[in-house]
Image (cartoon, rainbow over the protein chains, first blue to last red):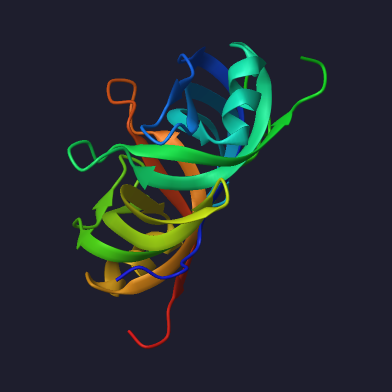
Length: 104
Length: 104
């Protein structure tokens, strides 16, 4: 029963790996990448080091933005998490916004 | 090189599975759960069905809040993603806020 639920991740990250631009059967461009993130976050009143690695994907116009970014670039992204496929339930970040961090 | 980067997920979800409350060696309570999420999200101008399953953990005072919630409960949560461990890089949602959705 799908509804317009809340599902929004905002993340500063580094494009660690960039997969080749591909197209869906309908011709829509899709770009995939691996994002790595390191920061300090507050949990239960204490600061802790956090690192995480996420697969991410950009569809349509955003796909070429991502594909042109190149690996090693620092970004701030917004998107939603969805299971990779019916077989792999690993979460993949679907990007809705990519901002390039100054000083890249 | 850790800094105060952005890492925030906001998610409406259902507590699908609740793990027994445990304590760290320092005596801090830790509760774990599996969250399931279903919604419609907009991607590249099109609405699509989204489902995702995430492991989540609550530490300290929030651990007992989660442990008392029980499975099947609908929540809106905020937290950050961190790799599960050095060996398993699967992302785990560390909860900073749990709101119970009315009508549970």
